[in-house]
Length: 134
Image 1 (cartoon, one colour):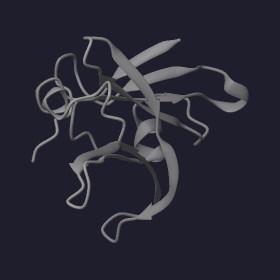
Image 2 (spheres, rainbow, N blue to C red):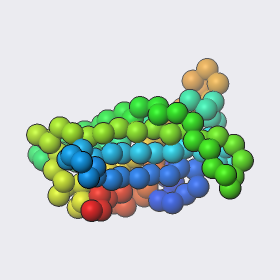
Image 3 (cartoon, one colour):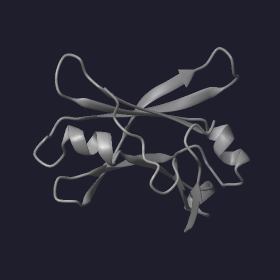
Image 4 (cartoon, one colour):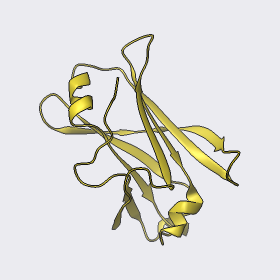
């Protein structure tokens, strides 16, 4: 399996972490531009799987798969992007301080037709996780 690292703010994906003003839930949102993923030289059939690695209180990391939330269109650019989201609300193992200090690592699992040429695309460099900012 191939691995590719894209730095934060790469046009292939947009990541947003925010805390709800109504309750203590934290939203993880990712918008993926399939065309930009292909421009990185990766085989991509358009069916990415988006995941987040979230720090737990015991020092380990928990993988969460984000759910497909639908298409997203940008007036400035042509084409549709795919949006994924997940709300974290189980605070037994995750603290807001860890989300602020350690951040969240995001990745995509992509492949070409028939699952060939599988790759993991990381949406940040090592130690450059997306952090919750209040």
